[in-house]
Image (cartoon, rainbow, N blue to C red; front, side, top):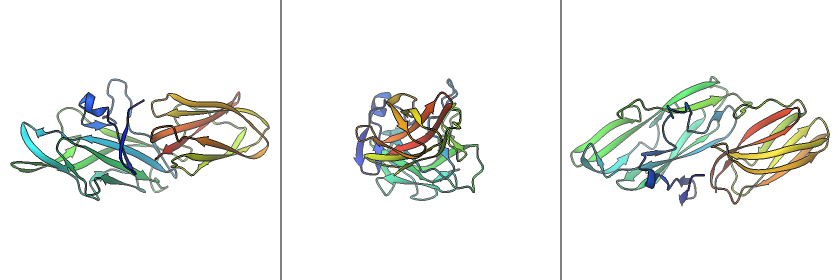
Length: 249
């Protein structure tokens, strides 16, 4: 799991980027493993993704003072219903610092899903010779992309089968900081496996829950987990169903 360090209530930075030397965390499109690094977005589901910006001291061997982005309109190809904010709030990231961008919102039905969106970040690199405009990461050397997968309202994560034994499933609040309650309509009585996974697919919680016919509630305590995107699943022998969770301390 990535180490994180929080500088502000609404934006969580990944401090491991200082050791790796990468410019962004999560990183770009993983060409080797054919994997998107940003959390998937889903129609009518709240989204929250922190992006850490590791601001270098120089650009093309020219010392820089800061990297700036516009407080609005700087991130292209975001789904309808989503926006962004910065930490610091003025979106000025000093050289040698860790800046943070938060992508958030709820993609609406005005979007086409499924879809793959190639995000672009318009920045100004401020050097001793003046400002240099740049669309990040596509204008960097190499074939760089920041892909965001947009899925339909079912929002299944990975390869999960629908479960005919379950009806309505929803976590509230979501995002949450400490506890969330997952309301489940079960069509049969019985035991179900309840599991929570981080964005890398590592299981961070598991237990067996017994449900009656009708509405059931499962309380999940995420206070000890780092802020970020997760998903939970409920399953039995007839299949599993998955939904996203977002922890924001």
